[in-house]
Image (cartoon, rainbow, N blue to C red):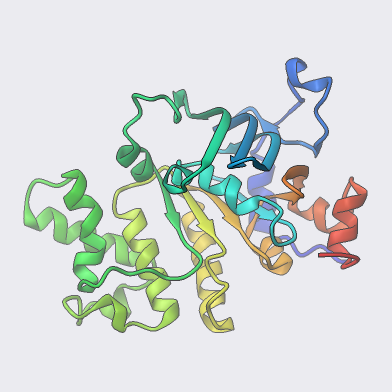
Length: 289
């Protein structure tokens, strides 16, 4: 299998310093590769997630580095989306879901009872599998978060924020003449970019993407992947994807989940050309999943 990681991604990887497994985890830590970094934006330790009595995530520990794109792959039902949703407490909205472990965003404990969840989800935004624009105008979709958080002082500031957010999402040229038309009237790919614009309008530090291209056609998918590369210059991004080709194209590191466990997390190039764990290799080569 030839390398399909871009030179730009490899260049960023060179700036993600690896770190050995901490001594307090080393004795029973089963994940291969390098899950920890010295420049972490988010740190997760000993994470377990339950839906009622059913355990979905088993003792996962890892870091997400600053301004990297981390892809999470694995068979359906392996826990990758559950783990992703735990990173901005979206699982709080699921009845019967219980999350254990330590989560930090920089130095902040995101599961601290004093943590403002609205503020957290502004700092760690999410783009969902199916585009979900609000039944509002394009302008009001993007303005929703800034209005909720009160991050602007004058209408002119809000107008500028809307423009910049749509430009960063690669949508401005397509919608600048119809900002007050319904966002639901856009194509699927445009709706997803609108949702990305809505996410970045509140200046997040981390963007979580849960299969953002699964409902899109190949042309729209290519545009979203291009956008991910552009956003990675300013944001930390974690993306769940069922497409191994997409993970290879957009990410710096790839994490492979299997039955709720983090099996391997490694340089994307290495995962797809010389995986360290036999389960990763079996999945990559199509023997299951």
